[in-house]
Amino acid sequence: MRRLFIVLLMFVALAVAPPAGAQPLWLRLAPTPVLPEPETSGIAPVNGIRLWYAEFGHGAPVILVHGGLANSEYWGLQVPVLAAHYHVIVVDSRGHGRSTRTDAPISYDLMSSDVLALMDYLHIRKAALIGWSDGAIIGLDIAIHHPDRLTRLFAFAANSDPSGVKDVSNSAVFSAYIQRAAKEYTQLSPTPAQFKAFLADIEHMWATEPHFTDDQLSHIKLPTWIVDADHDEAIRRENTDHMAALIPGSGELILPAVSHFAFLQDPAMFNESLLHFLSAEDDAHSARTVK
Image (cartoon, rainbow, N blue to C red; front, side):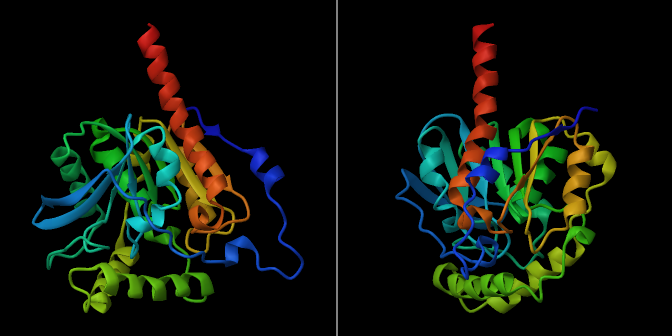
C-alpha cells in the first residue's frame, strides 16, 4: 500500500496572521454565501422524496454534497470557481434545504442512495464528488459500495466511526452554526416548522453512524484525498490520519488556521485545494487521450 501525504506549504506561507486582537479565522463563522444563478435547477423525484438540485458550468461532472443541517448555499464561494472548468451539480440532501424527507430515519446509506438516484435522473454515469462533513461521509459510502459511480473523492471533515467525532457542545462556532441552520431551515424547507424533529434525527445519526471498517476503507481504489482542518472543532485528527493511512494511495491534506468551516473561513485556500485535486483527473484524462 502506498500512502501519499500531501503538504501544501504555500498555504502556510500565504497565510497572513490576523491583526493583533483580531479573532482567528477558525473562530469565525462567516456568513452563508449565496449560490450564483444556476443554468438549470429542479426537483428530482427519487426514493420517495423530492430532491432539490442545481447545475452550473460545463465539462466533467463534479457533485458537491454539503454537511449535516446545511444546504447547498454553503457552496456559494466554490461553485463560481469550479463552474469555470467543470459541470458542477449541487444537491440539498434529504430533509435539508429545499428537499423533502419521509418518516424513515435519515442515514448515510439512504442519502448516498439519493445521490446515486440523482445521478441516474440527470444521466450522469460517473462523477467526481466533493463532500463536506456528512457530505464527505456520503462520498466514502459511495466509494465503498458503488465505486464504479465515482471518478475521484475529496472528503473534507469526515469521520469513519462515531468515535471520530468530538463533543461540540462547548464550541461557540458550532453552536452558532446550529442556530443559523435553524433559521435557514425555516426559510428554505417545505416543512419549516419541523426543525426540532429534523435536528433530533440528524443528531441520532451522528451518534450512531457511520461504521466503516478498516477492511472497507482499505479496499477503496479510486483517487481519494482525506482532508481536514488543523482546528476542526468536530473531527478528531487521529480518525482523519487513520482513514488516510488505510486508503491505498490516498492523499492527506490538513488545511492550516481554519476549522470545520474552512470553505467559508478561507475560500481561496479551499478552492485552490479543490482545483489542484481535480486537475489530476484532467491530467489523467489527457494522458489516456494521447495514448
